[in-house]
Image (cartoon, rainbow, N blue to C red):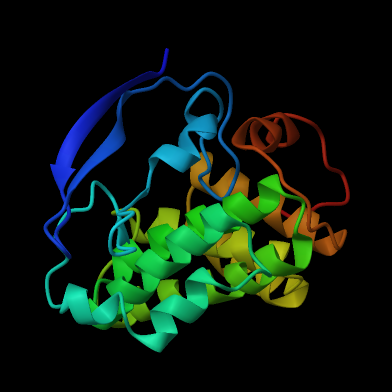
Length: 230
């Protein structure tokens, strides 16, 4: 069950009082996608993950402050306004990308990657394949930046590696996926992560760029693969 309630918050950018719809709780039924997108009901709360101030145009979660950013100046800058006006992307994706821009200014790489993934899913929902691929490429860049800074997105380098495999496969980097998956499989023992990596390798070998779920990976792992390497 998803629970949403109206709340009144103070915009951290302009100080205005704004009514927002807060996501109190939700549930997930089914299997999440390999890029970590949750199943329903949580899948359908994407629009509740970001808020916008109608007074100044600030986009963020709960209109809360973002450290390291001069918000009043940032939300008026041409780069920010250009993102919000970019009609290549649906409005929801633009909202996330505007927040990502602010995260980039403040050096918040993890939040920037989160916003990028949400923008990807907003494009997926509108069947905007080319735009989603572009954003997946950018998500790969944010993952690389996080790792260069000694951080992880998921809290686990192995889980980040699995996310990398899916982002790379969905953008058509099939040879890279096969190489990464081989390395991943070789260093892991039997287990959940290893089987997902093998599944991603198989998909890449088939030049598959479609959405797949963790449940599909498990079902694949339980079926015989006489031509698939260990």
